[in-house]
Image (cartoon, rainbow, N blue to C red; front, side, top):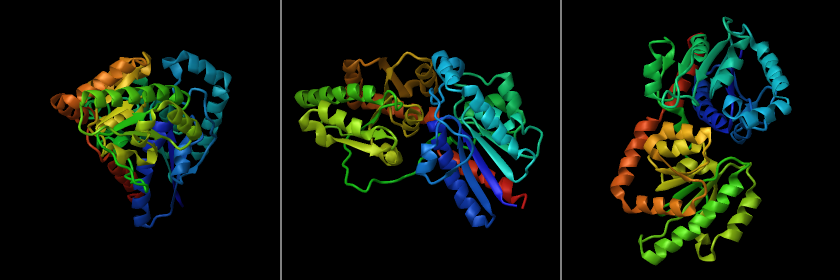
Length: 385
């Protein structure tokens, strides 16, 4: 009987983290000689990240209006999702997963928050189906797990939390919780084919697809002001370069047009627009980040890079500030002058820069989570065969 892994993920960041674990799991299972299949089941989008990594998609899929940022945290998006057929879509997902009840050769891996976990166990609890939960979207640094979440977590094979604090808080409540490294940080290392020269490099993460052009407009204005200020005041010996990191399904043409229009001519050769598949390479060759991202901001902090972010004054950025602490510097929404000044401070004050880097490592923890989790998943299979 063929082994089948299904990764349920509720957002682009969670899809991406799933691909890291799948990459390692695929290697291990191929070496073992067992017959297996691995699928991605994106719950709130059509799985662009899975497709990009040649991972087959399974189950009913669609892009929700909220792109996954829904529920009690954002009532407006929740209403949009309801109008878009949220409840019938959830029912379709549940009916699909019910096909795998009582099948010991099926392994459901829920990545994100309570939603994929709920779907995984709703019709499968106390059955022979294997369920593993990876709550990358939850940490005791931001909020505790509630009693319902802890109950759901008690029903699965294993829970792999994202940080040591969360493990310490849960280990007396659950006997199936582990911390083996932060899988958020285990990006692929791919070097761009074209020659790029990164010097004092600033990474730009423009945020969600629906707001990236607006954010990039202000970031481009900031590039002009920063480079003129550095040149006029002789702040650095070498002008910074900039790497704009975007997923491949973003509006590339519009982004290029915006940069061409708004960026001063003499600075254009210092700005690169790169696919997010090169993100780890860029992280390892950069100085700091201007970021409106979710997982992307967290990954930058994990590589000891300070992140400066416009504060949209919403629940998500406030939550991320709790998670990243001193690693995330929040400034008023679209306050370009403050963004430039904070950037210059980090270039000038090396002690502050080093302190933030150490804090970043402390907050995000070690790499290796994807490898260690894949080891556990592979052993679940191999010990049964």
